[in-house]
Amino acid sequence: MSQVSDAEQTVRPPRQLHELFGFRQACACGRVHQVDLQGAVVGPGAIEQVVDWVASLGRGLSLAMVVDARTWQVAGQRVQALLEADGHSARICTLADGAGGRPHADEKTLGVVRQALTGCDLALAVGSGTINDLTKLASFQLQLPYLAVATAPSMNGYTSAIAAIMRDGIKRTVSCHQPLAVIADMDLLVKAPRHLIASGLADLESKPTSTADFRLAGLLRGDYYCPAPEEVVLSAEARVAEAASAIGRADPEAIALLTEALLLSGISMRLAGTSSPASGGEHLISHHWDMLAPYEGRVEGWHGHQVGVATIVTSSLYESLRELDPSSIDPDAIIAGRKPKEQLRRELRLRHGPLADLVEPEFFAKHLDDEALRAELEQIRDGWDALWQKLDTVLRPAARVREILKAVGAPTRMSELQLSDEHLRRSFLEAREIRGRFTVLDLAADLGLLERLAPEVLARAACMSEGA
Ligand SMILES: [Zn+2]
Ligand SMILES: [Zn+2]
Image (cartoon, rainbow, N blue to C red; front, side):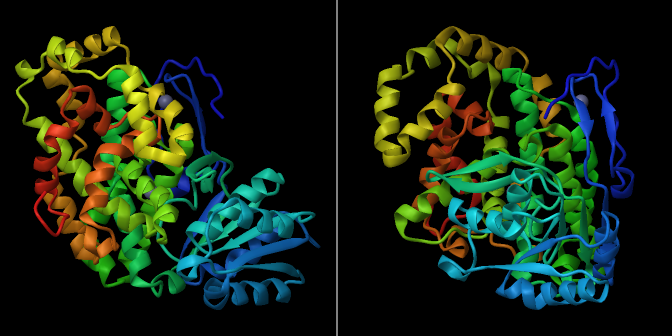
């Protein structure tokens, strides 16, 4: 995915959606930033253009359309009528509802989609999160192009080149491809269920913390970082935050703004070649709740809703860390207080039970030995102001995140997610262990403060029914 580049300049990608189609430029970060998406139609009546995109690939094609019972009603049958009027016929794959009355992105359902797509020339995903992810992944595996017909501005996955799927009990992000084009008909999207619209906005509101985490991992761990991906999404995200109330009222212009920002967020991940710019510690907390769901006999909540609440929490953690006196960072004391590796391993086994084998390599991928930790702690202590200068420009106060989520009607408390306060206490401490990605949760852990700061951070976040 990441071709090597020896360009001298950091790419300044365009910020307008239409200028990014087919974009390709080598960058000083060593990668070639590339967008495979050839188009996106955002506007009233956009669905009519499905036939133009199909025709752009040829005539007499064999098509397969993936829907569920709801998206068939909302858009699928209209798409089929348009295709038939233009002389095409499409095989229809209707995904069955699972727990919670909706389909799920798991290996079994992926198999169903792959079978439906086998032998076709083009796949159409008519739906949002799960339908889009499964069609994207199955079409990638079969080396087919696919068209995304949006039914709700509920997530940023329409234009990303990754799909989330539950594999062996862990939510995995799998690399695949972008669609040929996205059709986002505003006549349909303004009528999307309000909780899905709120989910899309809430997912987008994680960009300040996910971008800060992306920067942090680059600064402290030397992980891949480039400013080009975040440039395409941050200004669009800021406009959406300002329009949160209008989005909550499903005002057509505001919904179009949200839709474009979500498409740009997906593109930023494609430009980065990783989900890092759009998925930090707040996403790990949400993924941890998803991972626990089958063991607790509950259904996963809406992605954006969970991410929104988790964003209040990680924003609060950034605030608490920001208030530290850097001279209080004592590398000797922190290293002396570390648990031996064997003890950590035993504790991981206890905490993660059946998932421990999968969690352990992720956890130890970012676990530093004492000397490397000492160097990192000295870097943090001595470079404190410079570090926060890089983070402050993107972070948003937790109180403001809460206000934006409330304005769109998205959850801001654990009880609204149908999760307990204990879920938050637990995931705040354990979520960082499920993935090798370095986030603000790891910064707190490296400083020896994750547990100690928990009560203060959770009180500040005010997401629980009781005190922290
Ligand atoms: Zn770059
Ligand atoms: Zn997300």
